[in-house]
Picture 1 (tube, one colour):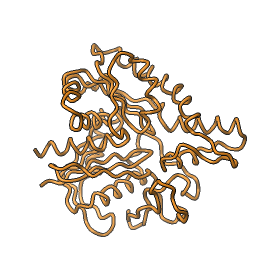
Picture 2 (cartoon, helix red, strand yellow; picture 1 turned 120 degrees about the vertical axis):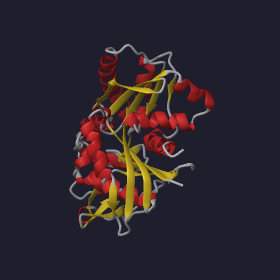
Picture 3 (cartoon, helix red, strand yellow; picture 1 turned 90 degrees about the vertical axis):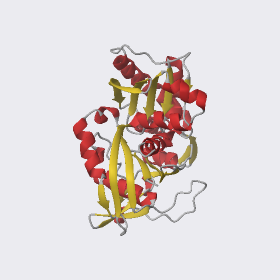
Picture 4 (cartoon, helix red, strand yellow; picture 1 turned 90 degrees about the horizontal axis):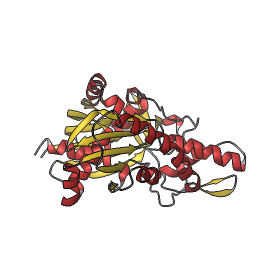
Length: 334
């Protein structure tokens, strides 16, 4: 049976869904941080429920890289690259090697990944990424051969995941309706309009009013109220560990009290940009599918704008694109 891998190399987290084409995929997630081993602080304290420990090590161009550590483990405090050419950077390539290692297969028949919408509409950029992800790799000594590679617009992953995993009523609704998929990620907020199963790229798009800016806004507000420097790295690390608080200057701070107000402001801008793009088309959504790691932050703003429409959120929305990539690849082998 063919081996399928869905890889979502995000700016905030690496998500991998893998397995046989006729099986339920196994899904793994780790923080999207990668750096040469010597630049990463050693983890020595026990974790409180997050399950995160020392990072995975891969070999890239003869150098050992650590992958999957939290933001506060990088000695120089440098943040990962946040730009549209992320796929061309060394951290991205190291994260991809880690994804191949986690998939635990010597041969991958079909691998599916994604790009932000504004990048995915560029055929040249899709082709370059396909070439980059295809071939023979040795992340940890044992060779891994990747044969076929597909590259989708990121929100398509969540749409396919819902079709594959939802009950019959929800699947029928998605198949027979015009669906607005809104994917709130760390770097970008992407939207796609899918009408009865057909992707309309002309009215799909990307906004940068995403989770990374919410974190920056929250960090500035905390510093304004309590003094000191904005605790951006501490907030990122807490969220990567699944925590909703940090300790700042000796005081426990509830992050949600800062992130949700920041989200309301950023979501308003992102939704304005999206609605400007959608008004140039003749299609109007019947259903909203809200997904991505920042889905919960944008939920209230999205539901207010599209009051009266069904607003669906997939199970574990941060992992939905990777699961959808797997299902898309698996479908090619059925």
